[in-house]
Image (cartoon, rainbow, N blue to C red):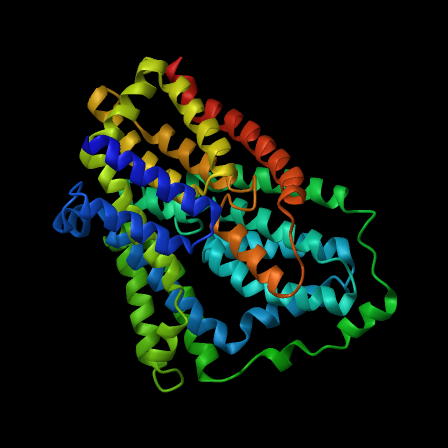
Length: 429
């Protein structure tokens, strides 16, 4: 009976998250609360065992760092400089926007990156009198691809990194960045060819852009120096954290607290906290409680047994199924709840004689992150970009994005399959 109740609560919450008729954080927290009220989990189990506070703390710390850093206009300065470097020509600008988004998503996180870049990109397209849709779609695709490269780039990777203690920031960089680079090069080339004829800019509009002074947006002063130095130090800390013998969350928290301390005269702590994406954080909290309920009643164990029964414990078969299964499902379902459900499933495999689970973790990371490009609801960054665009009367239609996003996912998964096979699965044959 408990299993049926837990499954009904989870399915209803999932439908609510997908349809977005109600705020998804409210749906996730409401579903988590129902798990507690139904006696599926206790409050102690939920807050001590199921909620991954490391993930919450890491996301919160990165939000603090970026919130303060963005106040000095550095991101606007970089975007305008970038547009002027390519002299306002649309195709090179499209490639530059994609590259900046991908790199930003890898070093910060893709949701934060698109929040910073989309308003700037809409401003640039208004000045150039060029269609914004190719740029917005490129931002979405690049953010999900670039975010796949590092532990902090995409929420699914953050969740995997926190759940699998032996995988650190450099492991993600070493194992995922090479194939991400290849996939990004293929996809951005395809986008440039696809939009080649439709992106044309009048010379007069390019001149308007070239006359803009990027430094007008840059707020020079102590805040600029402090925030950039601390952000760079934090990223270096991520790279060196195995040598520092401390968790990546501790480094992010140290960077956030340090920046809050040294900038308290320029920005009150209350002001910084008011800019935090609390909806995202509470969405994660509710989600962890929901998944915890499935664990408590044994549904996660049953899913693990079903996959193992089908694959007969064969690592290559299991890995490819997880890659394509997570890729296709993440295209139509939000990849965050999907990964939250899959992490305990893969962890459970160790109890059935599968010792080296790393190929499965890399398959899940690639499938869930890259699969998010399939539809407008496939990843958090997609929803954020669509919302920002809608506010400026630039609607991204679901079907229009699907016709571009789904082929991108298929191509990405095909390339990932070849990579996973030759790098990780050959020894199993």
